[in-house]
Length: 230
Length: 230
DNA sequence: ACTACGGTTGAATCCTGAA
DNA sequence: GTTCAGGATTCAACCGTAG
Image (cartoon, rainbow over all chains, first blue to last red; front, side):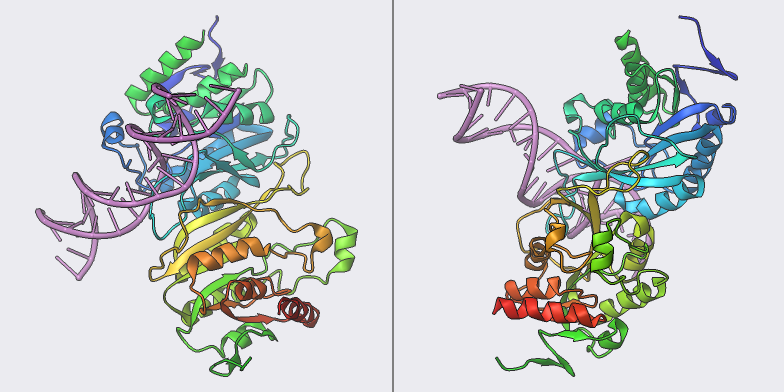
């Protein structure tokens, strides 16, 4: 297949690049959808030694507020008019993420991803954590393609034995967002690619993608996942 | 039954009073739990004419940020040490409510109330609204009484034909919170009583309550609901 | 195609001890 | 004192296997 270019960026690759460096190469108003899972800024540390030893620490997971601010502004810049944005986050920093999101986009929903299992946490003093949030909004006005879906979505998380990244999101969920807010051939962007779940989802739904990931190990895994699709 | 007093406040009544006026009468560190459903600050107006004509406009529903700020500080003052707080809110102002909540309490969860039916809203451009949030936290450290419950709670909303107040919450949900974070005989506080759902729930769970409501019509309904219990 | 049962897990938090 | 890192702890829900 011939290489497709957008400015100096080649489509349908997982670039090993710092997110702000990479995104600066993308022209204004050129991508059709953003689906992204940035660091939650909560200094995540898995409870399980197996997980701790299996994965690197998550890059930029603390004190990266400024990175998120700049990232969202850049997402706004590169999106075409009348497009959609999906940003994963947890309740711990929902106030910060919502504020930054609303600087750039019209927030339409805080979607709740209701997971099958609940986590650990403060077992005696708190409810069992079972959800994550997805900020959903528009640049301009974007119509949903699928029939109406509620803002609480039940979706199994990936069994830990199959995880390739500590915070990997199910492609089932990502593909739902991609189908619902883009058309075949559109360019989907994710600046925090991890092991490429957004890229894989975009490919499987017949969309193009531009993705960056800073960790070389994850880039390698992402490319293997993509190669396995062909 | 003999009247019980807390300072100059009589327990187990729905007072027709401005919330800040009323709460100022409550002594420091005297109540055991706060479960409250303040105005969401979103200029609520039902889409349905039937609903619009059935209910008065919600008092204090816009430009009451300062009221919420003062209210939460007062809730902090009147709570005993090592107690819990539940504050309903919607995603539209979750950033403001979270910030104000965290000024006064340790936020432990953002509980998602997953309603059975979804609402209307922007049919083509947004996901169907199906949830509300409840900020849950501690003053000091409060242990939950029931076995572990996830932070996504499925609970039917009250059918609109049976609503006595436009934003009435199901007692099933309120009673769950009351059982989980207080003991029989404790005083449950709600400064935005509406038609007395928190009062009814507290009574049914064998707790005492202190509640205020500014709208005389709703106070009357609340008292009828309470009388019907005896 | 069922249920029963034991093993595993979790974007976590608490607690302890060191710096 | 205070912060910080690392190990221990916890249990409802899910998974796989066996019956």
